[in-house]
Length: 243
Image 1 (cartoon, one colour):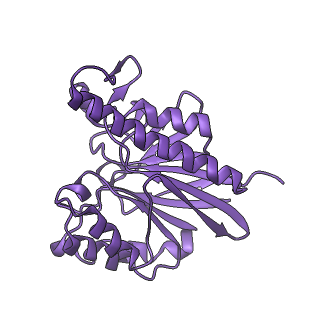
Image 2 (cartoon, one colour):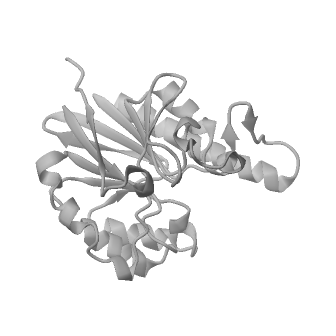
């Protein structure tokens, strides 16, 4: 059994240093890896990212992250990612990482993702150049996730996890105003998960949403935004498939 700890939308800054470290220090007893589902900072500055990096530095489990919209706010997302990487966090965008967990190859594919909406109520790549660019960016994120998941399968991973900030399904948005659903995620992410295959999909972003959802193809989806899970991290268990 693989134990996955996950949290998103922690929004750390200089005033919150040390807030999560006591809980994270327990991960060695209860989890095999920690996933961070974006919006790790408040305004996407390197100074804030340094606080996050210290919070997860030297943990007894590997830490894998994607960035969120807050982490892009100051147009310094590369520096944010670099601060995290300097403390051993693997920050993904359209790529995957393979972790050896007690002899089981666990693959994590990640992208921030983007907006667009869900089946029947989604934006399309039509009209003004701005609208086309909007959806092309969403599609590029989903394509990156699809490609990363397929590469992990080709690498022989027994378990694969899709990690995003924006939601792949509307299920986990229940509680959010319907008017903002298109800005909380895109069905294209779910299509990537279903077509490439995954055992679990984890996201954040929807602070007023709900934890549990599922893709049309039957993949479990979990919204781990801290305001939703109301704790330092949620734990999920994945059964290792028989050889």
